[in-house]
Length: 412
Image 1 (tube, rainbow, N blue to C red):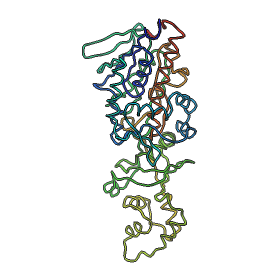
Image 2 (cartoon, rainbow, N blue to C red):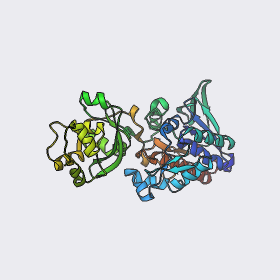
Image 3 (cartoon, rainbow, N blue to C red):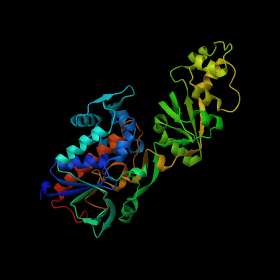
Image 4 (cartoon, one colour):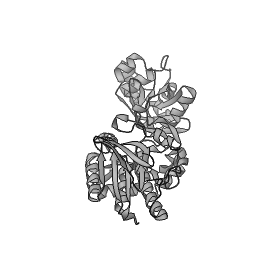
């Protein structure tokens, strides 16, 4: 049998699953995509509400390092589907892109919905069948069982790509319910942990009431040897936002290990201590302390409020005050849960799959996207690697077909 005689079922209609489906359909494979929700890519659409961040323009060496311990593996995924490929793919769907001042790459429309409509249209033209409200319920005697509104449906595909997501934003479909059936088949799955997530800070009632929902920007956050510039959002429970997410993995590990972590906030990262101290020599006159800090130090009201969250009086002298402004120490006391996390760590361990992303315990079954145990900060890195893993899984399926002819009973 040639690849054109094969049928592959992709389970999960998020970015990783849809990309795997596209690659397989282009190779002449009959593809069926199963999605438990009433429509495809709901998390993708939600993530794009504030501007769909497709990828990042950072040089590849730094780009690959964003994946932490998984960098050696994920960098291999980026070879067949790099940020350059991502840009070409989006523009091929009629969605021109631009690179923002932060280096992030967005569609000019700044929306996910036009791109998704074009993508689903392309998949339809390629013959991909999308079955919504089709939830994978496990395997029975090697068959694949799905729950549908019409009742149970049993399938026997030649190969399967699993792209069911992690366990964040469960209301959008990524609920992690796939874990038990895979573990029952001998697949190693690491516990889920929140990633790109907010942290608890014990604010005073006055600060929380006045400033919850307001951004701190531009700031720099430091934890350990790593400093990240960007912005954060004050919430009633603590702190969240892009700069926090960039440090969320080591912060999470520290909080889980030690019970707390200390995050250092630089409220004026664009000024040196000396330059800021010089500004603070300006006479306060009749200004309140808050107004004086706003005028002399350029602090926003929320920045002044954060400065005053530190117990005790503001330090006297321009030099000491400048040092305080550039190093506000916050104690993080907890991590928000999976339901509030943008993504998750944990999932199918990288040791449980081969270089083609095929499960060693289930030949002919491939895994892509956030089901796998890797994590990355927001900023285009998550979506880029998820879609790249879909390409790798699809190429793995095709290579497996070539190597095994009619396929393996394990997948069927």
